[in-house]
Length: 574
Image (cartoon, rainbow, N blue to C red; front, side, top):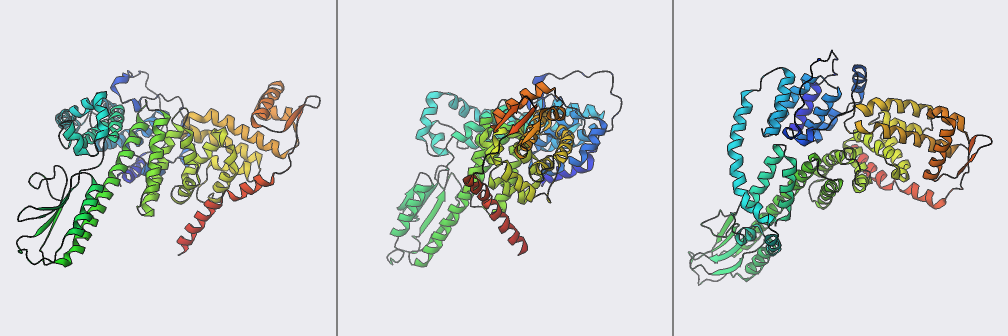
């Protein structure tokens, strides 16, 4: 809901920038240490007033923001202001709202706050100083509480003993820590993230996820009168379940020699397992003559186990999301670090028993976050790229977020290793053309569906403004243009038997000899069956006979996607 509010603010407030005379006096650049690393990137691409107005029709910010963390939105808006896309004061107002709602006023964050107030020509509101004072009192308390655990985790000899601990309580008892210190560590990581200290948040979450996550669960069936224990467990949930089953089968509620006051009680606790020191999750008492309460006891137990399982799944999901967000924003993170958590979330959602609609929403968020791992890293992990272009992901994009087909098309153009899946992926883009279309998708359709090379050249020209204004494609335009030309040439070669080198040189704005060398390298890299006829100054293509097996494979690759879309259309009809 908050993300949708931000999206609405962005739509209402942000307008194409009105270009004016730039002030002659340059503001002093802040020191790098004072500003969060995520917001330090220097932007080389800037747009003129006319280019900014033209880009408005291609802007996807209002569609992306509902699926992005507010820290991501802050990063995008900060860079967009530097590029010249939006009115600087409008951006400053939106950023201040986001910063106040979602950030803690650490020193680095306060520096960004001051920059935005300077942009507006105002003094920093007193509410920021009041909030900073509150945080300054609370944070040392959390740090002091977590410090013993962090010191223990820095000791390699102590870390080796962690394997002996199965639950959180085992860790606390073995190393003489407070029983809630592990949960406090997660809270400390969250505060570090909110303070834009993403490197510390990454380190804390990595250590937290290495610790045992099981809660201690104690199960006791005993006589309230004399304290006789019928069945008990003091380990984890599996042991408690086994003890419960064993005790429930052994209880004889039909005995009449027991007094009604000497009833039996089922107690489920965690922590230290004592009724006097922890809160019971539930208690069910029944008398010796009430045998019919056994089903009630079992139903109660199953309900408690289901609730605990759901809570564990939710906590695990939150930890993965938090770790992924922190690593995306941490400049020191490697592509492998981010890839690990993207794939971990994918596995988590595959194993989830949540409703399909909830899974669809979660996957939609994950695909949007994956854009940072693909386009903001110098060399993205190929596993992430394969995940983004998998049939399951393309089905989610078709159903929930067709605007991501822009980035599907960009991946096909930017990464040469994906040429084997270009045709079937473009077929899906063609199928969804009525839902979403832009110069990137139209370029691919013109090239591979309509075979219209003039239209492809025209769409490629439009792609320049789109790429320079898009947050994820801004730094890839030169590579995008070069690879797009390669796609045009390879496609042209496959349908023409003879190509004049002079014509190609003119199209590519190159000298004839330079173009000939470029074509030779291209033929080698693309593995085209062709040769250069130097006497007639042309490229001669040799057409290979059709491969029946490859044709069968290509025809059947889209079956899963077609089945998904068929089911979706049937559900819509019903």
